[in-house]
Image (cartoon, rainbow, N blue to C red; front, side, top):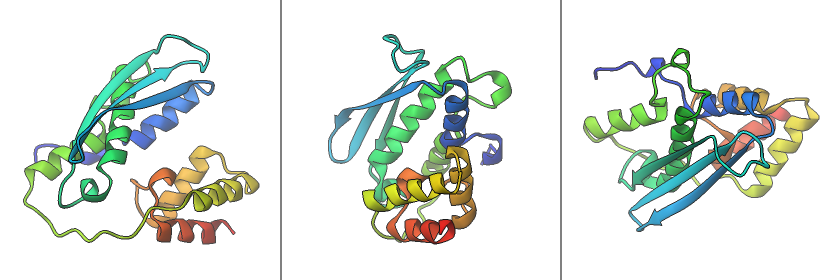
Length: 179
């Protein structure tokens, strides 16, 4: 591999910077195409939720695979990638922020350029009730979005873990940590 993933920001890290810079902003996503095996998402970023013109846009495409994250979550992964591309296209993404591609995109490059690996799906996604309960517990604990993200990643021992993509058993673990 000709690159070091630690040199690239995750989309989640970009989102934290986005919301810090544009706390009244708006993120709009739309699935532009879905074939069952592939999808394309479009994202618009607005500096203020009332703005009529986006400050940046981005597209992403993902293809369903038989292993890795795209075996079970290629649609969600595609939407996240579109958000990451839009942030890369906005004034917030300065050269000092690191390379233009996100870590998520570079992991895709790595996935597609390495030999197949065994993948075992790890359960169903968290229910809306679990996600809502986590948000309530975090609010009660005085955690902001970044604090909650850090707690989730620490509890699950993964820099890639985000609230919206938690599996049910992972949500249960986070709930236990917040109680």
